[in-house]
Length: 348
Image 1 (tube, rainbow, N blue to C red):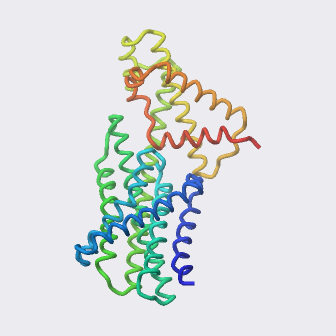
Image 2 (image 1 turned 45 degrees about the vertical axis):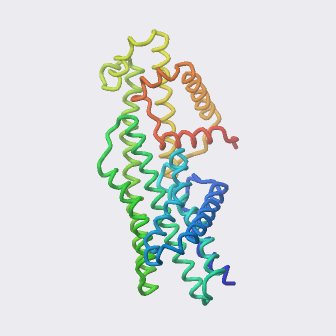
């Protein structure tokens, strides 16, 4: 019964966080793999701390071990962020919580098997608090890594990077281990400590959610407006009237006419696919997305196939030349992947 009491809070936390994913961004398979990654991270930390426990004082370990734990838990999250597998706040929180949940499952088992006997109430309460600190801190780390990847992508595309975005990223990556250190190093009334951790963690996640919402709106609203403006200028033959169009015209003499024509077609298809993906994303976000009919799905599939063929035919040199125009950020890539998956799904 003690094992059930220790593991039940973690399972409940994971299920609650997963149910928040109204877009089904994370599959059950990936969720379970991340829980397993968290358990492997706990096993690695247990082995490491067993080796260092003989020469690192317990008081020092209270400050060092939480930082090490967050670094180890952050490795699978870094992999997901670098490979654009989590690009929105909700999927980063789910992934982080899953890793932290797996870690706390194994840690609770270690305490039950190797620690002093505990009453049922203590086991249940400790399960709640440990799950909260591990899942919450990992969620903050995941969000920080997701923001970091966004900044790197903006820098590669030579776009403006706001200073507040940099500070927010650094803050999240520092706040998570700092909160974990505080939890381990400073002990006071257990109920007050739990309420403090719950309040701070909840406040940070709500603030991060609102901040991410602002970044998403910047991506959707401002980016969409510029893309539609460029698309209209291409179709109306008025490239010279906008800044991006003028840039395209400036590289015209660097390519043979047929290659430049392919470049313009490539840019046009890129915009059409990106606009379609963003529009579909907004409809899903608002709960207004109707089932896609076969004609619409077939059109998007054919556009994507033509886009990939042009990409291969143009070559890397030509694509690098128009890289400032053809931008696919992690959020764009994720939105396009979701759109294509919906287009390829069987029609009802």
